[in-house]
Image 1 (cartoon, rainbow, N blue to C red):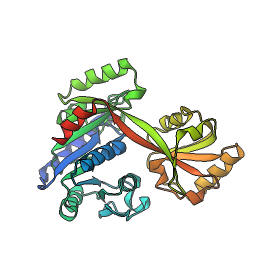
Image 2 (cartoon, helix red, strand yellow):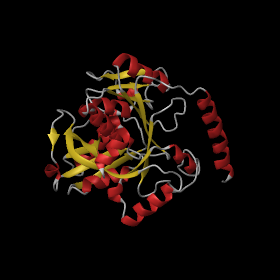
Image 3 (cartoon, one colour):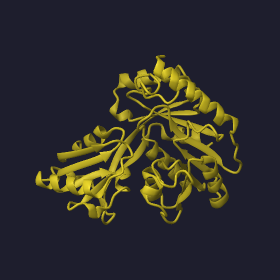
Length: 333
C-alpha cells in the first residue's frame, strides 16, 4: 500500500468506525442494499429496478432509498415519488432517483444523505415491507438484512488498489460482508475473464456468485414517451451523447444495432446537461447528417426534448440474470 492509499485507508477506517457506533436497526421492513466495492458504474440502477419489480410482482410493498447524489435536496431529504407521481426534478433529487421514479411509477422513492431517516419514511409513511438501498454497501449506519454487491465481470476490483490510486472504495477483504455477489456485464466478458473473476472473488467471500447482463430492450421517444423498436435504427444516421462512468459501452451498444454513429459527446458521470450544450451538439450533428440524437435513460431525465432540433431517443436497459430463479430465491427468502 503506497502513501496515498494509506492516507485514504486511515480516513476510511475512521469514517467506518464512527458510522458503526451509531448503527441503527429498523424494524418493520427487510432492508436490502445494492452496492459495489469500486467507483464507477457497475449497473446498480437496473439491478435495483429488477428487484423492485420482482418484489412488487410478488405482492410485497417496496420502496427505494437513495442518497440523491447531485440533487439539491440530498442533504435535507425528500420524497421523489409517492408511488403515484414523480414529485421532483433531477436537479432537485439527482438523476438516478428520478430515473427510478420514472421507470417504477408505483414504487415510492425517497432520497437523503441520512438514509436511516429516508428508510424510516419508507416504512412509516408508505408501509413498505422491503426497502432497497441504492448504493448502500458503504452506508454503515443502517443495519441490513441482505447486502448484494455488484462487480464488473471484466475487472471486478479495477486495478486492485484503493482510492485515489485505484478504484476500490474499500479493501477487497470487505467483500466478506456480502450475502450475494452479482457479476455484471458478463456478456462483455470472455470465459477466461469470468473464471478469473469468480476465482478472485471467492478468495474474499463465500457468498453465492451470479452472472448478469445489461441488455438494451427498446428506445423511448422523449417528446412523446413512445416506444421505438431497434429495427428503426438500422442504417439510421445518429448522434449519441452520455454522461456515464463508461461512455464507450453506451456508444458501442448503438453501433451494435446497425446504426451509423456520426457524432458523439461524452461527459463525466452525473454531469448536469445545459440547454446550450444540447442545442450546439444537435446543430453540429445535423450538419453531419444525423437524423436523431440518442442518449441514456439516466441522461434523459436531466434534459428536455425541446432543447434539440432533432428528436431525442433514450436507450432503455433491462437486467438479465443467469440462474434467475436461484438468485431471486436467495434474496427474497
